[in-house]
Length: 118
Image (cartoon, rainbow, N blue to C red; front, side, top):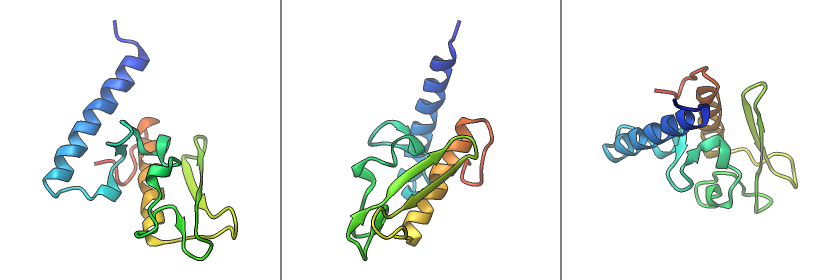
């Protein structure tokens, strides 16, 4: 008999493998992944890691303040918000894409597939 944890882990493993194949084939942009191949987790679970900060592309990075953005994940409203702890802004196209991927990941894990959940 499978437990809920086993089923969720199995679903994550399947999704990681699927997204790896799609990304390798050029059919999925790295920004659109709902999983993280570095951490082996859903992207909303690890987006706050320093590994997801990129000063060049401005993923989770405030250019003006030169600091990493903080990440707030709200599992009730299925929303993710990233902002600069210094100025409160730090918005960029890259950060918006990461927020969208996190929200899709969060929705998918809660059984409510979002736009990116393909």
